[in-house]
Length: 411
Image (cartoon, rainbow, N blue to C red; front, side):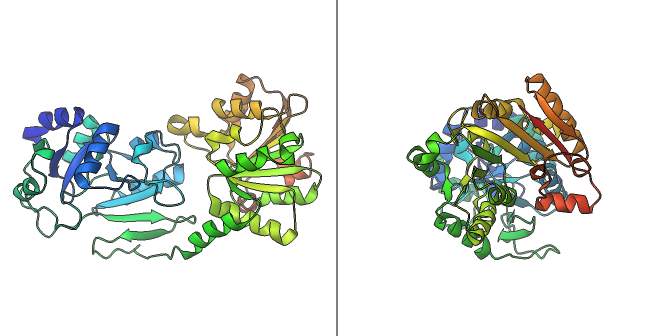
């Protein structure tokens, strides 16, 4: 590859296609961040527009610049790619700006990455940026074992062919994904045996997705906006909003305690919100709604200044250097909350077990001119309100580990 590296870089930078060996088989390479190159690759590989490609990247840090991933996921990915086995990992496409890279066949958009175990290829990726590299064969045809077979398949549709020798008895990478409990499931096997290989049935998760849509108080964002505009909520001034609600059991308990208020729990994961919807049904509550939405669209949930309270309960701390902009207390989100909250009596509540996140967030609130009403680094030993002391599932676990809960209230 080294003799052709400058030509490879120039060809990919032009938006043209290259066939060469990846860390597994021969692949058709294109620049992932070039939309036109991606479209060209789709045509050549006869790939449905909803189906994504595996994206080769040089590091986990590059992935963190493309999508939102937390510390736990970053560590897990790094551990996977320290092994010799070429492994591609499917992740939620949260925060992805290059939407043409997402796989949209399911109920949630996903994206698939691999850090190659080939050092030369990783060095190339540092120079080219992320690359798409589906195998060099048309649908239904055998993998190209050499450059001659690849040329016979694609001819002039590919601008550059790089001979990497004969490719025999080599399989494509295995593809894995993780469920909500961070357990691995195999999407595509490479035929090897691994200590961590086990397949989890998707039935439970798919069941939750389906049931979410059946509940009358559960909505995807577009349907929610239609419902909201035509309901009494459009004039409601006592709305309580939980952002990044997860299972939303915290909001469910608030709704039980305050039947005179209207609660909206928002999260990107409908299978998590399903848990709250199911509990609501048991309690026969009619003052709470569940909305599946990207948090970046939180200001579309309700009209400006119509929300009396916003709750942020145990948001992802995100690493401060690479992921601070994704924190739910980052300035862009504070601007959304300011737009939603009532000017007269709007209040934001913030709970976390993460001391560095709490300190960083206090600085953001101060710099963005929020007025602090109550601050404590030991919530359950303080004189905070009873509703602030409602324990979430995360909170119970943290408290069992001896961690103190920080809480702040702002106007």
